[in-house]
Length: 307
Length: 290
Ligand SMILES: Cc1ncc(C[n+]2csc(CCOP(=O)(O)OP(=O)(O)O)c2C)c(N)n1
Ligand code: SF4
Ligand code: SF4
Ligand code: SF4
Ligand SMILES: [Mg+2]
View (cartoon, rainbow over the protein chains, first blue to last red):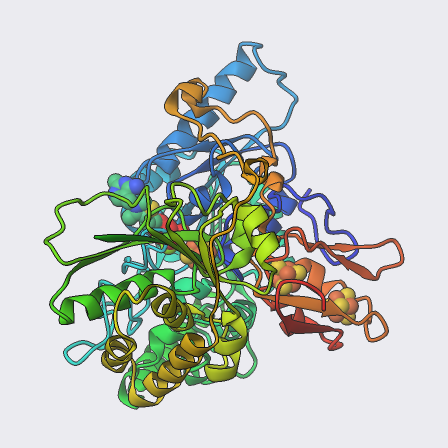
């Protein structure tokens, strides 16, 4: 049964251990730590190359307290499909206790999901494997030093979308991965944010119970890549949701629900809150972003049947 | 040719130090090269940078294994890493430290010339941030004369805006003036650290299998810290939020609902202090409790 978590009942065990090599203040590590608590011990993590893999698996150490397999950058969902199929067969043939629960959980970054692992993911969702896919979105290729991805937001300065005299950062709009997942007609899609820790854990717990594919898109504050002080990413996460930049919603069997902000804050509050990647933005660019966010938020509300 | 290896932590500016000197040397008509050593470095984790300065063209393109000079930007490294590895006996160790000469010699096993500078203090005074790179350049120049002080100052004005350049130039000069030099001293070989043996591919299990779950706990990330959370139990409202938000699982909730900090792992991000609704956590500069 899906859990409703709070400070009292959240598991005290850590399945993503201390001593990992995430940067000081890395909220990808926080998101994974919280998700792992909600997933519990009976999982197998399939993890693409990227920050998460590097920070958790400095050979011969691992921060994982659960089985974990490292995949290439492009085939996380394919490997997860294979592991899931293998357990199905092993259970059927009696090589593994049929009543022992095992959930396959794929984890990959925004680059590994929206760009390079996209095809494998689409295939796995369409084939209907029973697994949870968590995309942790730090909005660029961070592990290799902050290159833009398809999920980098408009205006953000990265090493391959640098802000300068001739350019004002990323020229394209963030690819809407959760919506693409929804288009595969899978039973569960959600967005989550470690700044709202219990909401994140509840969604992960729900996803774990889904019979079929579940996709969760998690906001992951990255002080290094965003050029922010190390104590700010949780606050930035809250602002991202409060401004409508990263709304929190769920799509269960086609039914949309969301956490509505009664009064959206202006995106400017988020964009100008100690993030070096947005420091160059002009008033004009901020207005363009505001218009887009306002429109998309209204669209989301109407999908949720909120007028 | 002078070969130099820098040891620092991600974010402290070891790479910048090497670059600034290389650029200054090139402007002086010398030959120079600087390069960071790539690995899975993260803010706060140990990092390396290399520098070569020469009157002749430099043909070599490899890492510096037998340095003439080693520069250590963070002295917590001497307790965990063999910073003096390969350092020539008649070489020079430049170190940011508040430790005594004896402790530095004991931990590094180095008997040669040492230049010690309290760079963190100078950086905080002159720049207001714990970034010690320019300060260390001042100490290095004082002890080695590798380039003139003015040449380094000129580079800073290329690199930073006028206000920041001036602050950095002040730090540089102050460091130059307050570096302490210790002449070579005989030390017992017993003090030397055995260089840790690195695993090679032969030691790896098939499939790169890792057998000890949670083995990362052997990696004490507490020494990445440049500031530390200090807990005021009187103010704590026992809400548990600091525990929830710590990315490093370095906070635990006691039976009586107050919290404990595990300084073996706390990296000093300050998120707990930022999120604490009762203002019961304050961030203090430095790695350890004063
Ligand atoms: C096919 C392939 N191309 C490039 C790389 C190099 N590479 C490793 S991790 C990475 C970036 C990963 O970005 P993302 O998926 O967003 O994860 P993050 O590092 O941001 O957590 C890249 C480009 C690779 N490992 N494989
Ligand atoms: S680069 Fe960003 S996501 Fe990667 S470990 Fe550092 S803070 Fe975390
Ligand atoms: S400063 Fe606080 S939140 Fe950050 S690692 Fe230390 S205990 Fe955890
Ligand atoms: S967040 Fe603050 S008030 Fe809450 S338990 Fe931690 S120290 Fe106490
Ligand atoms: Mg990324």
